[in-house]
Length: 353
Image (cartoon, rainbow, N blue to C red; front, side, top):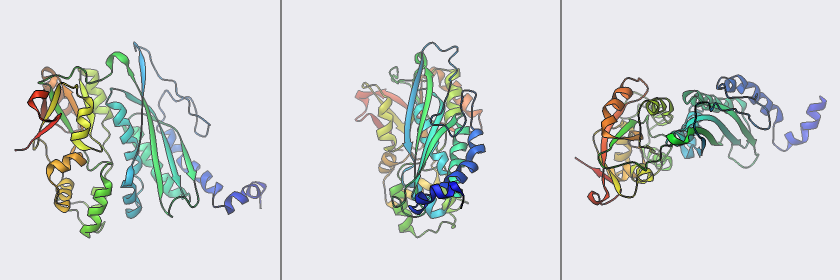
């Protein structure tokens, strides 16, 4: 037995495999480097990641930070033995949040915790994190892998992520200037994203659908539809922000339309959403039917096919749609308008046809 093996033997006997950790690092090293942007000033493996942001041309740079996880959607990764997409979810939930205030993501940090480290599984997860970072043009600057025997069930893990972005203070998107007549532009979601999964998993179990069956209303399997990662809106939204003013933005996450839209509205206005002005993905039709839910209940829980909302002055709406429609990575719909608070019973009023 080598000297290094002897030194780590006690740790191994306690359930922590140091060699598995080393193998994991070997597997992800090139993947992580593929996300590096010009601001990265360090290699992987240090105690802290170094990043030097480019602030030339900025009047007053401001950092915007966000953190989130994937929630119980991870249970589907375990169930389907599919681990290469939840890392995209992890990045998406944080970078979409910092984007709401107009910030361009600079770097991302991840935390991976498990009872027994399986280098192959962990590497799949990190491959998704790297893909999410590439989609949002930010660097995976560092992370933590925690092997905690007895803390998690066999074959399971948990994830959390942390994003830091930057915006020039005069260009900070605050929602303060939102006024009656402004247009709501909805950007299509890719699916359920990363909220509401406790309910979805319950409905899936009750339905008896198997993961390799065709999902109702689609030509894809149940696993493919449900594990579809959260859409990342960074590139199309930042391009739009560079071209024209956007008064407010919403990342539609847990709490759906009713809880998320009011977070960016001034007290004197409300949002009037025209239900049916955008196409509904089959997964939401299935959830509604399987759960015997109303559309107001669905809009309180899920994104219902709209994952991100832009609020623009009507004079900029046509140009916004032209720019968004010219891209092949996003679908945009006019889903409503801003009205006075006196015209609405609540701050979000959904008008059903």
